Picture 1 (spheres, rainbow, N blue to C red):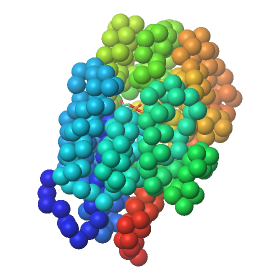
Picture 2 (picture 1 turned 120 degrees about the vertical axis):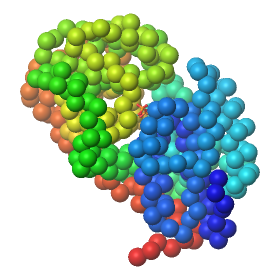
Picture 3 (picture 1 turned 180 degrees about the vertical axis):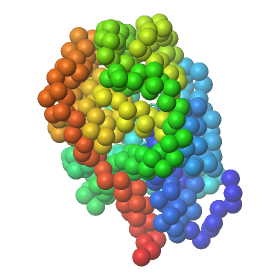
Length: 385
Ligand code: UDP
């Protein structure tokens, strides 16, 4: 790591997975653009390849890379490894503040490690709650622990801020900023519009499926492993019996996902099982799609910005804004329900149009700048005019 600038407060931004990297790269750039702070990035690399895809596209070179991913590691192995190795990094660099994101195991363990050293933590995407500690699991508890310890809470929406207040977080510690995923999405969409070659890897599959209605699919949630994944695969298999439909599915590399999907869906003419896409390609896929079918958190936030109906393959969501606005619907992993709701959207124009309204309940693309200003202010750094 390059030498610290002793005159400026040191801010260490930490994350470990693809979605955190997507949502934190705009924050890192905003902090650096703000100035007056020595900003470094530490990654646990809880995901490896799919994290590296984002680092590259987001223009982030980590100062500390703990490289902790191991094949099919258990939650307690990973938690223990993050805690012991990350602590050493904190001791070495002694930041004035740590910034974490969301609800991963990295988020929780980095927050704990900072707490053990009395280093204040800022939590980006704070206040999301499903009210059920087993759905999403273990994310609901990961984010509650981060919320209990942080002294700066960057809530993406008013609803998230209200959830924090209900847990007695003082109003003065809460900043409603919007979700930084919209910053990442807008920046990447504009980049792809300027430079289509950034997402041209989808041209062949788009040509293969020309004239068909495209369903873009992602599935990776831990609580859907096992029967849930089987049911999702069967629902997709049912939907793909239609000639007018094609499914494009970047398959998560997790060993609880990939073999199930390959066994159930491999070799089908109108299903493309493809490698995970880098962010510009995934943004392009969302633009191309008629319908998004997902158990992801981030995709639920991104879909409404493109006016794409989102069927959420989960029983609960901590992102109710899309449901309330009518652009997202919970369908769980119920095979019949997934098929019924997708079929309704494919066959009923009015039902489709009612869900396909572009709106941005999750942010305006300026969340990262608000976060940078609040972090700077907390450390006595003025905002340049
Ligand atoms: N995403 C991506 N490539 C893919 C699938 C998803 O870049 O092949 C992006 C997607 O746009 C979203 C994020 O990854 O921003 C979601 O990540 P994931 O579904 O792994 O996690 P979650 O959002 O559920 O935490």
